[in-house]
Length: 238
Image 1 (cartoon, rainbow, N blue to C red):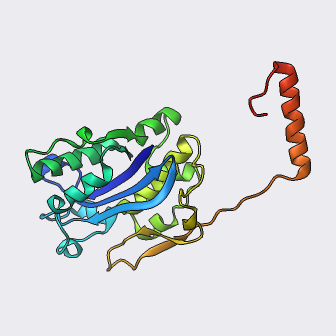
Image 2: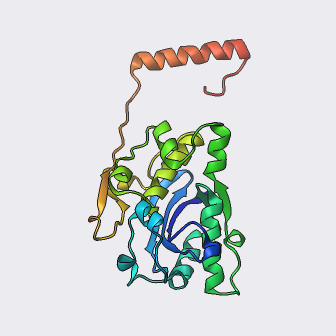
Image 3: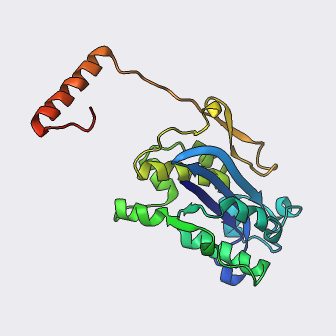
């Protein structure tokens, strides 16, 4: 199963008012494992960024001036996400902007929903935690996901997509192995390709800790399975 966790940063809140995408970040999950295969682009929105949006993500028009526009990266983006399940937090926001950009690119292109399926983690969070705050920050705090990079550097599409991937895996039953490619374990994994005026690349060390069961723990486990088998007639874990 291939899933793409996606986040965007924009010039403002409403595509209907002419606001545009300025950053797209995607991380790939295959069979619920992060592969390290990411898609990340900064985009020239060809318009000014609103002050309120700038205060959130800190990405300036000056930084974006020499970046490609959406039409230039759209074929590569579509190739990356095609036939996957797109996972987004408040998906209507991100998909609304993506479809707005697709419409500006060409009238011949179909909405993103024709190429992917969509899963909204905000809907899931509201079902699991009714009446509580369900922003990405709140969910990460609830699951004790490290937010230090976000606190230090603010919002970023790739960083937020990585945080959302962690949150999604925990909300839906755990993440299994963090990396499908075990050669990635212990290596530096790029967290966020920040604008140069903010900082250089920020890296997180990843490692896997394996704790083996002791002989006494295994004996106790097997004894419990025998009790289950005697009581029910069978034990699926045997």
